[in-house]
Length: 447
Image: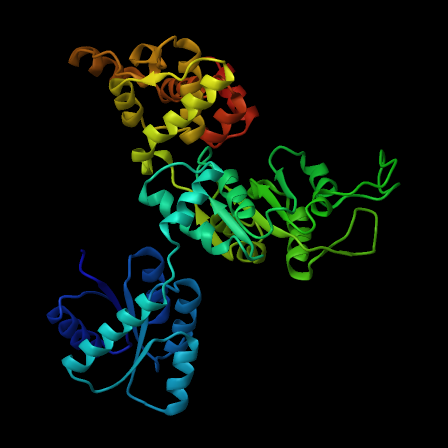
């Protein structure tokens, strides 16, 4: 087991040094911060097992850090230390999320007891879902035994029975819609509607009317009143895929939906109350988009109440054999073939590949292999691009490295991605992070 890491926060360098020495003696690793801002940055970007913070600090005080940590990092226990003890301060600290309260000055033994007690109490409070529950969740199409997938399943288990807004992030092809469906269909709202909406596939000028509906005469062509996706999802879940593509006008309306729990149809001034859980997904960095002004910051924080990150396939390579078997069974049945075996060498090639298209790419590879196979899937039935490239001499390598242009390298990679997704230009554009028009221009541009 790795040594536990403790974040110490105090505006006094002397106190930080003393705590560091005491905790090092007790075999703990430490991170140190002199203010709340730096402490939050460390919490967000490091693996911390315990937070120890002073209360009285200039600027943002330690109590605010305790509240922040309890809401954003509830699995990290907090130990408060202070040189200004009071009963009201202790009560407030505990109510805000602290597990222990230690008064300066204290001995190494007193610190040891407080730290161990904080770890023990936090362990008792944790309610990890039993293995049986996680196994049941995998029937939602989320297949694998990796730690990365187990973390996703654990989060699904925690949020499945509430209406909290969920933001699912991850690369294209990692199964974000499967996660959204797992949240909905494993919870108590499973019998209610689940309405998926791809915000990137609907033209910007139509997205708002598709989401919220419109009344007769609202605009040219509105010959009848028609309900939108939100009305269809009432009582259940609406899944807004590729939310980063929603125009600012739609973002404004979505913010109102989340805040007021009501919508207004296009052309109507009469709001309608709705009861809908919103799950959004994106392969964009919405936080960066808020800084550039292309995504509303207030909407980002409203959507990001609970965040679930879907790992890329290269982060869960141990799941590739299981996923491959799943797709072999699926397409063997679809093409009315006896279930095919896959050779060990073929599995090695699958595990070795980097999978830029993630699970979607793997499914395409297996679908092709099933079509090409009669009795088993071996190396010969797998796509050529998965195999080791032909070796070239040093002289030839130097020549190519010296004279291949960036455009040639770019085109070569684009063609590789297209091959991986069976020439599906929409999927290829998603993987490459460009739109279809740009992809077409790059393919048609002269060398």
